[in-house]
Image (cartoon, rainbow, N blue to C red; front, side, top):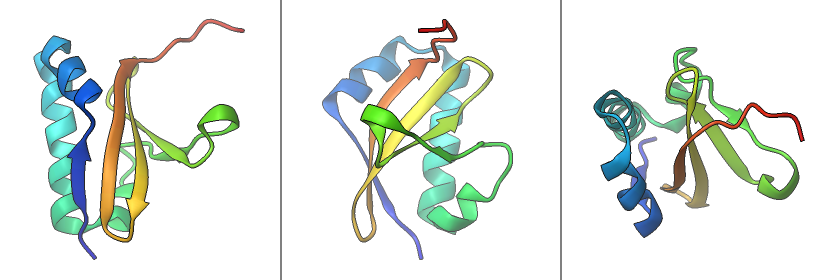
Length: 93
């Protein structure tokens, strides 16, 4: 089952400031989800798709590289919305 991926206004702004390699990886993830489906894409080890906890429960994270993360949320049946594309903060809290 394929899905439709949308971007929040915030993400569109973030992507313009991201390195080109990260923009390409986001495009690759979106293409994979829209052609192969979400479940198939989640199983690809290169994306490291994982559920988030705490205040971000209900959202999922995709590793774009060692530093950058894509955060998305399933809205309805076949609709996904990318909430954020950001460098991951490794500092302990």
